[in-house]
Length: 220
Image 1: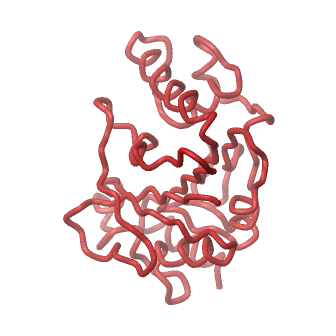
Image 2: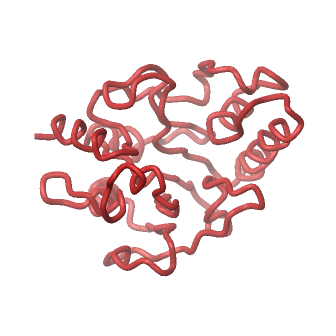
């Protein structure tokens, strides 16, 4: 059984600073809010254990059949550690970025992944919505990888603190899971053993109203 945790606990500063109203997760795609769309897509693939990591003081996240999880950031504020207390101790944990509009096929690949190893899902190369640099959409791990994933995140932060790399986040932790060490953790490299590339043009996240409008045109 898969436990899905939707990461929607951010502040939405980029969105509101550029004129966005409300929260990104509440924007509509064909009349359906982004957060509702993700929940529906997960359920269509028989995932029913769904938690939503979201601010405790914001209405709109109480979706039928799901449960809310208040963000508990690490001291250095990394979103991927939010909900760590809810990572499954017996089955697969699937963490999904809540600001992503998923093509149905992409969600099928993510939800239907059966490998018993850590796997990151994202776009490695340039995208039509946000340009270069790649984008992450979800991560899958089992109980035997929980400690390694948490350690990878902490290690990435420590490398940044020591000035060895410039930033610390899920990209850097993924590279550590792929075998990168030291300064190589800061280099954009593909580690195919732990990365599934989803480059279908229709799957992407959005930070600004302009990016949101572009995505909508890909989902007529």
